[in-house]
Image 1 (cartoon, rainbow over the protein chains, first blue to last red):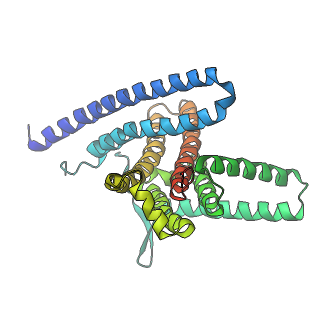
Image 2 (image 1 turned 30 degrees about the vertical axis):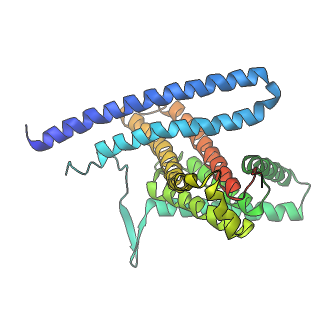
Image 3 (image 1 turned 30 degrees about the horizontal axis):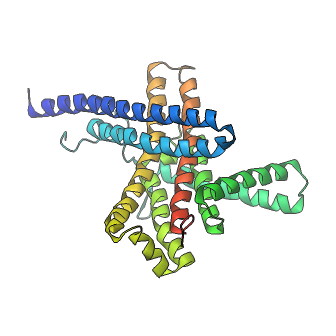
Length: 84
Length: 224
């Protein structure tokens, strides 16, 4: 095994693990946001508009962690600075 | 074939300026939006009772209400920036559905430029509307210890704006490209619909976040 083959193997495995961990954390967080906003809407149906708006903003905040993981995984796969 | 995720190839050179596909598509989106806006504004003046003018007024009212709700204050500059951002991001998401065209926002340079517009608009608008002293005092709220945190958050939220839009648009485009390569006809259609939904949703989120940041710079909701 050459050095480059090792770098490729480690990059691919770590890209998969990065996506797995990032998606898990974001999924837990987003499910909690969804559940509690449903709860709030059921309690106060007249406040549906502001709740939905804030829910989307919160979802975007949480999802950006998963997106950061995606960007890191893509850097590992397609723009790896050590694989040249 | 290795997909081009970061950066892209130069198509042509106009003098010393390299021209890429993203520059062409983003210019097309901008020109189409400017042309549509100009036509609709003229139509609303010339024939205010027509159906198109009424639809345009409805859309304008909905966007204005969204901006005012998110920013917490009514300001023409905030509305202009926010509606322009929304129209550009949603328009490029729709343009990206055409075959062979990569949406301009699936490029990290474009999204960084959009985020830098917001990053620069926050202090400029804040100083212009509230004065330098009142704007700078916002950094020392609620306690002077918070000043470094405010500075870090200015940079990190700009980075998050750019990377969130880039990641969403590019990943949707990449998934559709992979499915086209693997499965071919009709299989990518549901994912393309999801991609379109996510594109418009990201435009909404980018706009709302920009409004929130600009509204905070204008001091909306602060007990002064």
